[in-house]
Amino acid sequence: MKINIKATGIELTPAISHYATKKVSSLEKYVRQKDAVAQIEIGRSTQHHKKGDVFRAEIRITGAGLNLYATSEQSDLYAAIDLVKDNLKETLLQYKGKRETLTRRGAKAIKNMIKGFNIFKKRG
Picture 1 (tube, rainbow, N blue to C red):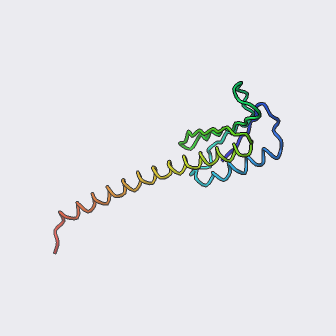
Picture 2 (cartoon, helix red, strand yellow):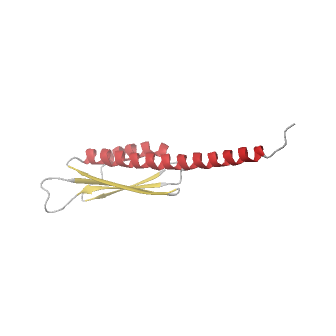
Picture 3 (tube, one colour):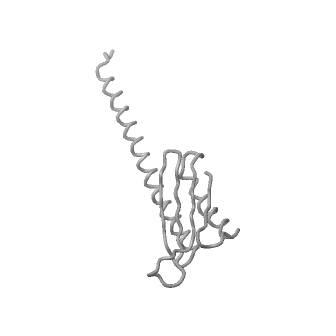
């Protein structure tokens, strides 16, 4: 999976970049194909009604038949990255479960269809 990182309102340090890359690369095992692209945007939220530093982390995974998006806002940048990674992991697991369920249902339908054809064959 290719990972792109963008920082808005803060300086992108190597430590932040490494942390975000490490967290998002752990999601790679849930994505079947390697041509997916993860776009990470981290920064400071500048909404007027918030007091103090509020950091935002967004991740969008596209490609390989996926178009997933998750976002979170926390008072700590690393906590925001952790939370958005966990949200995206849950979404990926749900998507994987749906895909497996459809595959199993299709296989079961084919198996039942083959069993039905065996009834009409002559025995003996």
